[in-house]
Length: 472
Image 1 (cartoon, rainbow, N blue to C red):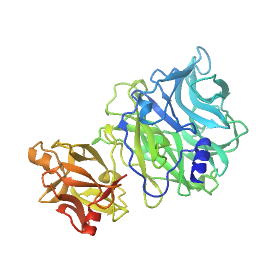
Image 2: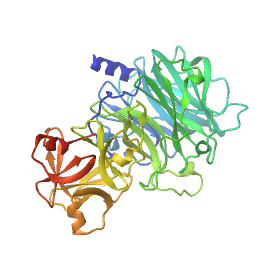
Image 3: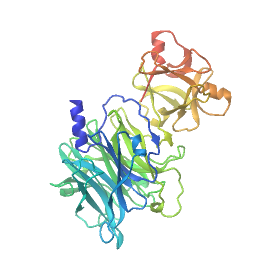
Image 4: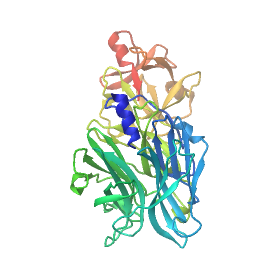
C-alpha cells in the first residue's frame, strides 16, 4: 500500500514526503549545478529525476534527467524550447517548472515581450512524450488571471483531490512588486477557475528589503498539513524564504486558513558563505525516505550592478528535517561540498549529538538544527580515520579534551588532529549504526553519559548502546 501511495503521489506532481519516523542519511555535493537559478526537480514514476531551471541568458528552457539527484550535475542538458524572436514570450524566460499531469508533461514559465521585456506573464507548454527531453512541446498560451499585470512563478499541486495553481503577481491597488495567490485549476492545466485568493502580501522587514516581494511559491505536504514556502525581498543577499501553513482539511481558498511565519525560515548565512537562498522546490531522496530542499544561492554577498545580471546563482540540495511538532526545519544553507548528517543516539532514539556553548552532548528536539549537523570528512590525523566538522562553525571539529568532547576550532596541531580523529566502526550495539573509536586512545569510544559526550572504554550492554549512533 505504501508503494502504491508513493506512485500516486509522484504521478500527481506532489513532492513526496517521507515517513514520520527518522530517515537514513543522504549525502550530496554542493553546488549541484552552477549558473542555474530557480531550480525545479521532480522525481517521476519512470525512475528518473527531471530538472529545469533559469539560465543566465534568459532565452530558453532546458531539461536534464538522471536516476540520482547527484547525477543531475553531469547529466546532458537539452534545450526544449527557445524564446520567440518577436512579440510575446520573447524575453526574460524565467523560472520554468516541470509537472506530469494527466499523462502529459507541462512546463510553466514566465516571459516578457521583445518590445517590452518587463511585461512578464505566465505561460504553459505541453508534451505528450513519455520522455520530456524528446517529442514536441505545444504552446498552450498564457495563464489568464483577473489582472493583466506582472505575473510569474506558477506552480501546481494537488490537495484532497483538487488541483491548485499558486503564483506571484502584482495586484492593482497594492503598492508592491508581487504577492502570492492561489486558485483552483480548470479543466485544462493552463487555466484557473473560480475564486482567486491572495495568500501573501510582503509586509515584514525581511520581505521588503530592496523590493517588496513575495514570489516563487512551492508546496510540500506532510503530517496532515500543507506548507507553502515563498521567496522574499531583492534577489541579492537579502533574498530568503518565508512560509505559510494550513491544515490539509482546511478550505485552502480561505486566506484565514493559512498562518504565516513571522520570521524567514531560510536565509543567508555568512559563516557558511551562502547568500540569498531562495526560489526553492521540493523533491525526495533516492530511497524515498527523505525530503530534499532544492534552491539557489550565491557563494558571495556583494554583487556589482543589478543582481539579475549576475549569472552565478547555483542550484543546491540539502536534506529537509522535521520538528517534533510536524513542521519542517530548514536549518541554514550548508557549506559547499558534501552535505552534513545528524547522529542519532541508539538508545535515546529522539536525541542527537549537538553542541551547546561548544560542549558536545545529546538532546532531543534540537530546533537549532545546524547545532546537530556535522560533515563527515577525512580524518585530520589521516590513517583511514574520519573527523566531524561542525556545519554552523566550519573549521570547528568534534574533539576530545580530557576525555570530554567539545566542538573547537582546528589549530592545525598534531594534538588537535589526533583528538579530532576517529576510527569509524560498525555500531557496537547494532551493526546498522556506527561507533567512533578515538584514534589516539584505542578502545575508547564516543559515548553519552548524563547527557554529555565523552570518549570512554565500554564493556556493558548499556555502555555499548550509549556508544552507538545512527546517521540521518
